[in-house]
Length: 315
Image 1 (cartoon, rainbow, N blue to C red):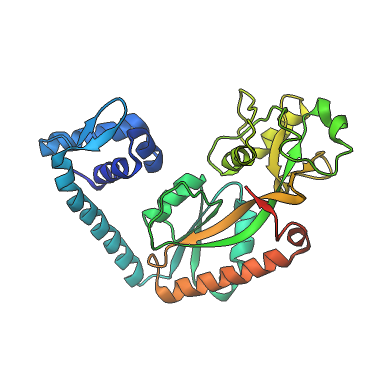
Image 2: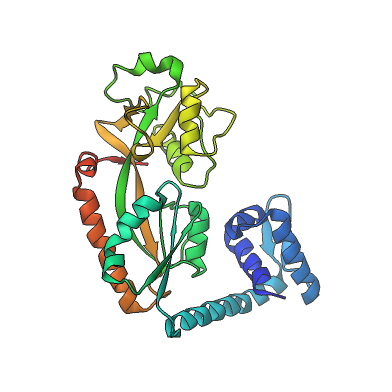
């Protein structure tokens, strides 16, 4: 029996399926299933009743679940206490999504770093679902990424909207003349285009789907998939498919694009800071959060942001 197996059980209960639990735990479904099976074998009883449509705890599993939750909670508290009482220099673990990027993350945290040079900031880039899981496990003190409301979070986390990045339409090469006279386009205008997407990890694909879903439009997805934002631009240049990207990922001098608008307002993707005040000392977390509020004010007052802030349509 080990902690990872207990986390697997709790994830299956909270997610309602082995596949979703595996995604949350960042392991393959067979790995998670084998871990649960090994635990069941050691305990001598089945924890879950599986059907083709559902996964439910057995009566034995329901009996054990409070103890499993208590063990995991106690371990998290022990980890937190260890971090709080360590004699070494303070460290803050910061995760960020690729769509946010290290340059923007450094800019957001620059005020905190200048005021606290003795605090080590350790960065980790990962997809936004994994970042939420790291925060939930107290393996990250702060994450900066798009916020997905469908991802369950515990009640003690805090959230701050930091910055909005306008989304733009990048037409494929053969259709650029058609769109060159447009100052902006709506989702309905481009509904017949075929779009290349990136893996659904950074938050951009979720935002793109939401743009079309909120307008009751079908997203025509190119059957292949690009690995990065730069690859999306290359595919558009090669006339394979169009793209929807944040303005910050497009070089205006080399790539033709058209702002994406809805009812006269820019459609944007929002970047959030999410944290758990209990992962580091309350005093340090308060100073960290105050610096983020200062960074938000500066980001919102810069010329590029001022043009797109306010009543934008948020993806």
